[in-house]
Length: 219
Length: 392
Image (tube, rainbow over all chains, first blue to last red; front, top):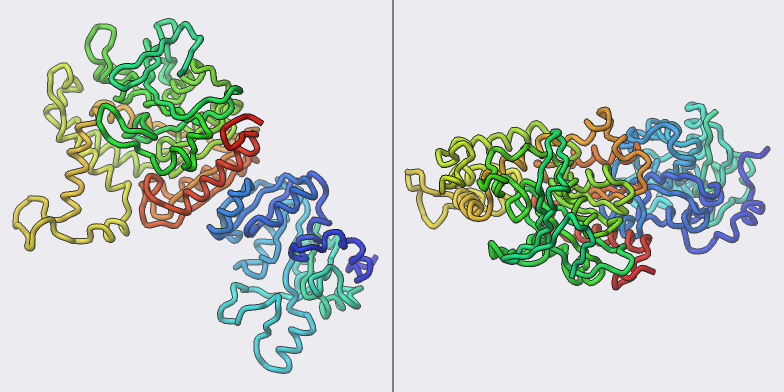
């Protein structure tokens, strides 16, 4: 079985969700089962939790570092706790969620390995999306200009970015393996849509995915 | 207008204080095992109860507060204590919700307390039984039952009002749709017990305290009570706000007096806090209520595991903390949140960045008010309450 879904299949799968929301949100929504219990870590203004409530009728909870984000979530009626993924995930009991989601947050935490371990303890399945530092444009910017790359996914200068631990698709797959997590699905995203040209394998996705979404399960 | 069908309780009003008087057949069972009877609960209401009785909010007041949450106190003449939060168009909109606020058990604004007259015609004084936060809540529950409100839309309170809100949700989970605990804790810390003890010792060291019988002897331990208030008041502020408001500025003078007058503005401010407090508060009430709070440790009723206090709860919770609060610091509030998470409860936690300390919940704090409004409005939506408080 190909781990990574190629462009045409993925497009057909997610076409109905391809509207305004960030591309990874609709991919994540497609991975979550109906009426599941979901924890979104780093849930921002709650857009993904709202999408999941609307389309998957999930029982959603969130954690968010910023007060503005928490206020926005509480105003929407979402149950969101102001907290820090690096510090506060230990509050959650084992197996208390069907899915724990980390949407474009892993690159900004202090201890990605410890955080991923916590997520896998709390949730039966873990969904992680992140910008792919292995994308050909990123590689070529660094290679040709000798400067830190800036792309739509990496918009801020090296000295101003919140990102601490950028990784590539292959780096992340390796970390998941080390933590005894199985990759159930890996969906590349490019041009704001699920799928990427030539992305039938992780190796190729690592060149052509601007972002990636991994669905992981415990071994 | 409130009607009560309960024959065991009688509504009265005098001097602007409305009370519900339970007769001797309806005693209050106290945590200590003692019974208190007869019980009177003084309360105030704002707004209108809808036909289905689904829009009632119980506001629980803090240590030295009273039932006049949204209007002036007719006895002391002091303005409403929470006008930013409760009133028409405020986060707790009295055009939409029916707001109830009761003077706490042991208090001195009409509810039975140590200054009430016992059956022998003398004030209770120290004969008043020692009470707990659970007892305070039980008395409120008797009021809500007598008002024939089967379930509250929300219970909300700041400081020890937050403790009452948590106790409500834990003791009566089916009767609390939403619960907001603000700048509070699930247990009173050693540091807070220490400050309260300083206050109690100041009161009891005042020669006019007279072993608690000052009332019968026509005196008042005003100096002791003022010192108690001054010590406690410091814990409601923050180092940053003291520096911002007072720093080392002198009060009405250019130089030190080289004496013990209130040279500094902060001294003058605290003295004013102390002396204005004694006119409106009873010293024995201060002893009893602080003791009740010292005893508060919600987890202790649940085998030491706080999460068990909220197990299976379908109440929606929102916990608010203020970054510079050292009376009930964010960590105390996070402890509540941790327990709610462990219990799988629907819980939100908002930590407001401010330099205003514990009292921030009473002051202008835009981020707090915005989040509270969001929580209340979204809870009202899921309760099916319309903008005029009507049940949809």
